[in-house]
Image (tube, rainbow, N blue to C red; front, side, top):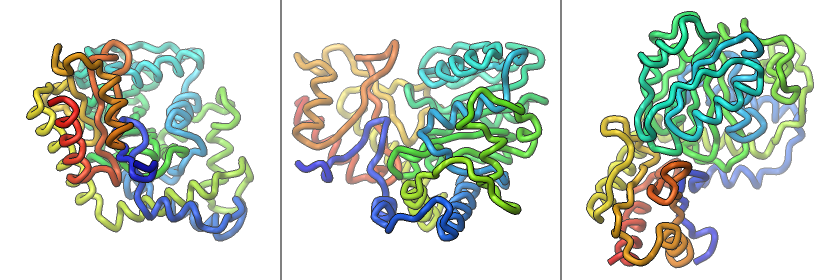
Length: 363
């Protein structure tokens, strides 16, 4: 089994679209080359389509999804501000950490893992926060929250949405749902290698940019001058041109297939994983009615694996069958598997291979 034959069905990188891989071999462009500037503009246009937004400030941050999270927070809040954060898994907890480092007060609204965010509890947590922050698709649990309901009731506060595992895989409408700031990653449903963080910021949020945020590299006051055009561009940093060319190609693959068709493919693959794992005697972890299509969380019943521990099964899957799945995090470590069907990986043939391999290992 060669590395190129591996089926990546973990919560991390998926198998990228062939178009995204091919773009990485394109001859190198300089970050100030007019051809690259035009490609960056078109990449931003494609991101607007996938985010369903008209936001001018929409671009790929030159770092992974965690930098998108940090950019979404440090540019808008600081000492004296209150941020209400929905925490129903690892990534909500990370938002709390980032908010706290800005000097703002982070109010964590804790939820049971596997459950969606309770919008009313979020609203009751503080009468007038500067910001609400929620995870649309919690990667650590496979639970999807109702961001549209949060946006409809947030009042004057900014709304930040973590869309790392949802962008391109499930319905997301930034403008219609009153999301002010949304960030994602390239390695999941967009079907591109890790390395960039798509970000979109509303005009309303831009009006609340802090003059000097607690980051130079992620300072949107400076970056906006480079990515939005509208006159002379101000140099900020050396953009990862090859990665942006790859993202441009990956977004092209998604849009050529059609967003509705891509989401339907993710849904079908996710449904197939759930049905197959139930058929093998496993259970579903995330709350019924809020289970993600691109990432399925599986409870491992006591005794189902026999004498082999869960990490041993995952290791055997990878070593003997070339299939990667993820383990649980935090309080569900050792008790939950996370199976991704994202991007190019979201296909029935991959699900069939996984279920057949687990059948061989366990029965």
